[in-house]
Length: 393
Image (cartoon, rainbow, N blue to C red; front, side, top):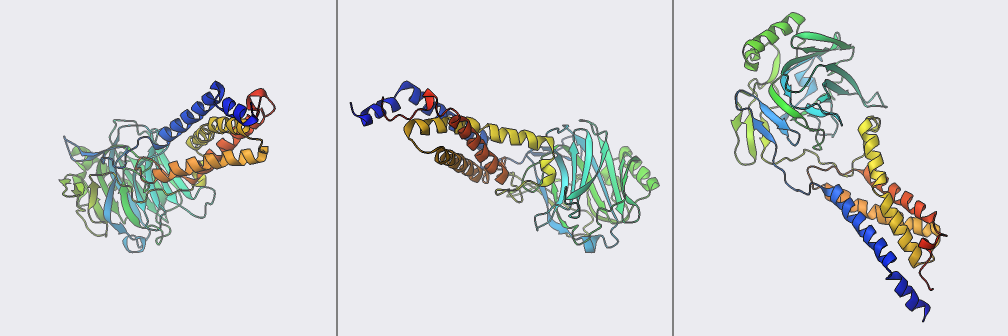
């Protein structure tokens, strides 16, 4: 019997077939996990509140303003107050749930107002803080199914303070939200970030933006007025540049499920639009995570998953290659890493088209590292019987 015939028989042995089967199964699992849910179009999960003004968000939801804020025009003195009424439906633990944000056309986010667990988190872009890229102020006490009226006041002279239900939280920053007026501009985005991530579950019943700093007495009076009526009671508040009370939420037409007019119209924000289809403003295309995200717990778990998920693939592929050839270890390791990179690249490319997935360069790199780690584990057993090349008996 020739060496070639013997090799062909060994390659068709139950063990070789089992290895190939395990490799195929691993690829199927990776593709399934990487592309689930495999949906190119998702309904925008926003609903008008049935028993009062407001709109509820269910994680896969988005609303955008037609126009944009311009810091130098809308906040000439760098004074700003944000007022909103929310009722969280969840306490997000794996990351932020974005209530609303300002998203600039340049791709950066000057302001994020979000929830983490039962904390309200306000993040403001600050390129001077290179380690994070933002500064932050937060307040506790935002448990699910509890309604709160929040006011955030900010100016260069008084700093930034969060008031909850008319009372200051005690956490004050000396920094101003609109310290860099030229940077503090962009569209208003509700329910998630521009790439569709960090979705929030809850109800938003009112949102107002003013170019003044309200006094504690005014904030207390505003809380009483809303508590005794609705957010509409604040419509006559001085200094308003945009006001959305959600009482006038109307059914949309065409691509919009709902539309809501700005009842002040002193900015270019204009109407809020809630489309029928969940469509991120700027889908991530092989995005690079921020350094601040790399310090979060969820990024560590994501790192472990992305590496560990490709280790078995690298292991099985390396053993199969070793049994079929006498290539040098370095060549096999390179070939397995290339297989992992090619598979990961294909998954990340398809994720660009999936609203529920985010294409990431870090995932591609980590997947490749995982495949290479699996190959190195396999190469450690090169002298064992299971890895002997199938070139003869």
